[in-house]
Length: 340
Ligand code: DAH
Image 1 (cartoon, protein in one colour):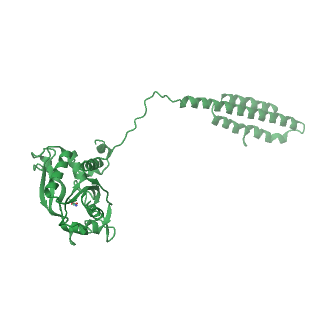
Image 2 (cartoon, rainbow, N blue to C red):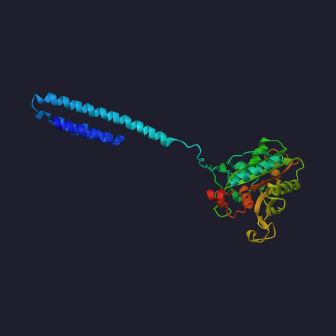
Image 3 (spheres, rainbow, N blue to C red):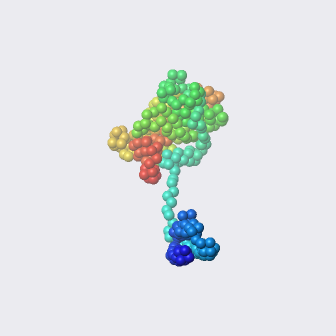
């Protein structure tokens, strides 16, 4: 038995010397000292020893266990010191290695155009005001002089939230809000999201963007309207850009017009992009504020007059960048957005 104990001690110490990681060390410990370990099993057979031998062998067995335990502890601390040293070496930071490139995003092309337009109008003396995306039927239709049976009021055209609340179909309700809260002279623009029950195609989206402009003062005429539009179109698209005013009908303006700009691709000579008309798609609707609208907001149409226009920011963006599909602006494909 004593011999067996000595052999166990010798073998185990040898194994411990060769071990270089905690996991193997723990395995050795379990193999010898664990419940089913070699030493434990051997000690269980002590009952078969003679009465005199038992204390002697017991003492030796305890010594062997002590020695093994001690060696294991020593090995543990030397392994952990080595591990620490290794960690330190591995964690060393080479400050001379070039850093990782972190790609910075930028504003969406639509928001770039929106900002550009706001800056432009600010520089022309306009205030930039905000309006809510959810508005009342009163602001979006009634006070804007939309007749009771106007098709745009239909539930198949407009997203109603309640009888009286809707997702604004245009930025024009900001006109009403402004005229009810400010006294003339008024010069404001307001840009934001608008919503219509439209099927998606290359020029339509149920959510799109508009910028509204409103000027109310004494003696404002259609000439002022035409002049402002001509000016900002030239700043936005270049001096060669021409505008075309086509008669139109809006409930809130009289007279009303729609405005086209020269096709950016051919600058008016005619090409496949503009169906050889020389004009790109309609950019905005405009007109002289209808006397009823002024009256609805408590402004006397005999004293004041005004002009207004509402412009599709998505359209402006498409014309500016020569895009043929509005969906590009909403797909959020990084490969597209990175180009702006
Ligand atoms: N709100 C009109 C639309 O969404 C655009 C518009 C036309 C706005 C004429 C105006 C305006 O302010 O005077 O189609």
